[in-house]
Amino acid sequence: MAPLDRPLEDTVAAARAGDRRATARLLTVVENSTADAPALAALVKGGDAQVVGVTGSPGVGKSTLVSALIAAWRSQGLRVGVLAVDPSSPFSGGAILGDRVRMADHALDPEVYIRSIATRGHLGGLAATTGAGVRLLEGLGFDVVIVETVGVGQAEVEIASLADTTLLLLAPGMGDGIQAVKAGVVEIADVYVVNKADRPGADGTVRDLRAMMSLVRRDPGEWRQPVCTTIASEAKGIDDLVAAVAKHHDWLAEGDRLADQRRRRAAAEIRARVDAALRERYKVTEALAEAVASGETDVASAARSVLGDTG
Image 1 (cartoon, rainbow, N blue to C red):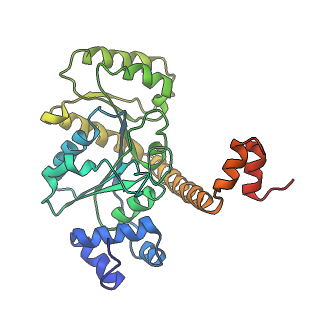
Image 2: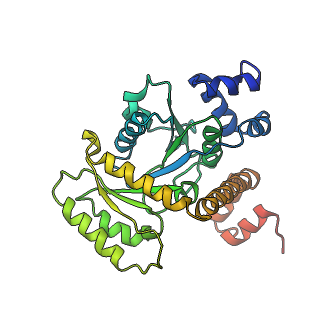
């Protein structure tokens, strides 16, 4: 994406009016932390979008479900932004899955914006700048921002800090019930979604989830994760899922829960930026790697030398 071709204020105004090219250019500013980034942050601060995270193993139908959710929220007249986080190409650094292909039904809707974001080596299922991207879309007036994670498995816990409501997708026949227990996702997900519910074994997956949740002790008033069943490719069960997300948002709005979640999101964003800056500052050279591989030095000593710790 080329640099801004007009004043920053005009680009922001155009993005708020639904100009996708302007929105794309502003997200590029955020992703690359260009010189315009601080001024942009000041211009778009505020906003109160509902942030929904969608995570789950590869093949469970995350992108198809996101497309169905977009349609449901658009039917309510809401403006929807999507940040689909993809693995990075080891050669170009770009996003290589291109989840936007599965959301092509919304390509001509000016009230929908979909962006694939490369992880650029960041772990946890998100990119280091995902939080800033969410903040930007909020400030541009989007009502709902959906963040779809990479889909690499049990390490994707960052989404729980970023999103107001986290959806964990599972599918029958993939061993996801066992994986859920192993990953401890009872603490990550706010809503469970058994997608592809027309497949054999769907009822068993729902049963396993409910049995697992029955073992978790909850205090009075604590959120109890519902289990929704969907066939995203046919938009079946989507209305019930949207209602569950709305119910969770209402629960968050009670007391200071939503404010606490937003503070956690800000803290997670800061940590992600610090992590990215440290990776950039403390680089491992080929010579140092060769020294460890040849036995000339050990890993701990090499790490201390990178950090400048000679003690």
